[in-house]
Length: 256
Length: 264
Image 1 (cartoon, rainbow over the protein chains, first blue to last red):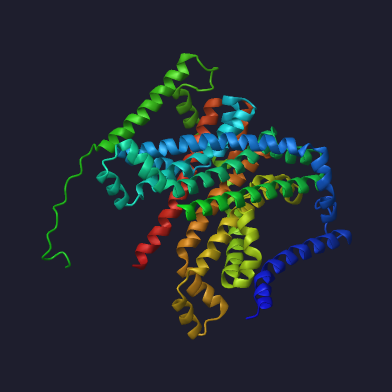
Image 2: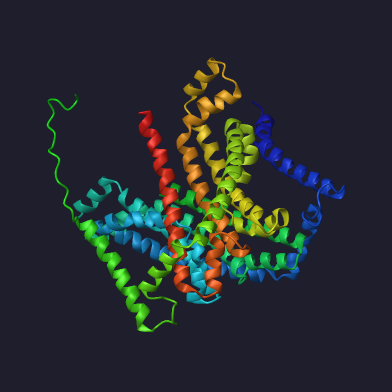
């Protein structure tokens, strides 16, 4: 196969995908212009595109982005420290794991974010509510993946450590933790994603803080193109965040 | 028959009180006692951590009120319709994407990357499209569960044993027969897993939407308890919600597993 054919094969699908998206938006634009879709319900895609700069410049989006990023960072630090800490404790104390692992798994399937009104009472309408809520929602995957990673350490590696007469602390830092790190990172990544989703969601719901509040604000002002633009912006940010963590995970796996 | 000639260990009576049960009991008791001490200590504002009897009373009152079941029914209705709509759309999308490599390369990245974005931000748009009533909540549930179901079905399609597909083709099965007789049974596991994840996010999407704008449903009961600062009721409804959600999740997992045993 010629080089050109290979390039064509490689680029054809993404081009078709992107082309269909553009085609869809054009169709929506035309349908709105001829009046088939109510423009007070769905704004013109061109209007949405135009309002991007307006939203970015007038709504102080950088500041809002930093607030959301800061809340995410705080939640993820808590997640990492407590998630790995609890996971390690569960792994070291077998009885604790037997007793509580199913509880953590059950916690992962409960809609914890519904407790946000409770957190409003406990922590007030503040960044702390958003951080604590997101921390709690992201915690179970980190705990579960830490336990999984540590228990999947190969017997051979543990025996090597034993034959070198490592103390249990050395055994943990030199053998168990490095071997479990890629799996633990999978958990941290899941936790981070849950945290990001919930930071934005709680911001939106309690109308406080960064990007989530922006969407609520614009919706309450009935600035439709602005709402659509802000939604696109938030989605873009979470996609970028998702891609970065995915790359990091792949890198960590290939390095480990 | 297989047991003949093999040494079988006599069934041992399992000790009634294993150390695990003991530890669990201790943890639960410690949590309850700690809660009660915190409640009566006066360290926190009154009713932020209400005493246990108050929470228990609220729980009984909640579960014995007709109102609760009316709201529960309303929410279940919304989630079920959302799950059916989003699930069917996800199933069809997953089948199409999973069966064609070109389409998968063209469109799957969009699903894959938009899947983990926060869905609740679409709620203002859904209100515009479907109104502030049940429509927008159903739409939230449908949008939420569409992504995990579509992605799981697509992934499930790709891991089907090629032999099964060849068998279907050699019987000249039409697309509908291929889907119902070959594809869907062969990918029961990813489909059920997608459904489980889908139910989880549809539940969250619908209930969160109800806490934002509505006058019915369990999400409304939660936010109403908050707005009237009825903390025992807030704790009670949250307990009920978590138990229901965990139960539904376990049920789907169990049903998925039961199918497997039957087939063997």
